[in-house]
Length: 433
Image (cartoon, rainbow, N blue to C red):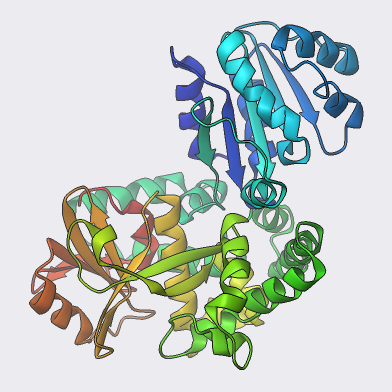
């Protein structure tokens, strides 16, 4: 599957000041796949080592970490030669070998001619739990998320539709009705499947939505297993409780995360660390409240108030038990508002945008606030074509932002100074802002 991160990987390969690369992200977002594809496409040879399963290779890092010492050992273990400038060396699941992580510093200092790319699931969790020494300043980092809607369109062989969406977003001109309706149909399919590559690939192989829930449940089960693997038993209970409360948190009219929903008498002292665990694992996306939508946003962030979204909208619908039929039919369902917000949060996160929302003394709320360079934009999310709301008007009146965007099932357009952007075009943000 074609992924946007490949262009960043090519830029890293050709950089004159290249450092070892560290690719992070939640489990099963496609880190291994994309590095292997990158190696096959852009290098003459590739040496792939999984440090979690290949303990002989992991043992090569137990003594001298100098590349002059480590590389001959790795070549002997794999039976493959690492040629400077021609071979991509992939160290997968690097969080399972602390000294391999430390060795990246020495590859940067002593062997910059070697292309080394490492990947790790739950890397942030492992670093925090085991107090690993991170090679600060000696690695380049990239984060891989689940596929966004544009990548999903590519996978569905609808690249021309994706291009048409981008063109009309730039011009703010409506798509022809036929394309608009097709884009909405595919958008609803994405809400069912989400962007986990294994789920999308499973659907592409059979064309049946019946195969989607079992694949999603397998990923959810793996997440649960990781909680037990990378946390103490008491921590695991709290982490699971926080994650399992996600659909309930988002179904509330006020979607602010409330500890008492997780457990009666719950507090940040009890559940603050579990939420941080979920965030570091890449399983949830944290959206912080702004009391004032102005630069610098860090000065006006309310650290005590936030919303949590799932990192993948398909996994959220599976976790909530929302049937594919309900989503695909477009039938009215109260939880679809939460699903739609989660979808938008995912598209913004993939685009590299920090997640904020705005609230005015609990009387008005704008779903997302986008700080783009020195500009501020308010984004309101509507699940259907009905777009009447007073919150965005209150936001404009009180905060005087650079602009405002309303995401809904309506076609491209502009009304009263507010840009109307179809939900299927959320991946275009922040381009053109």
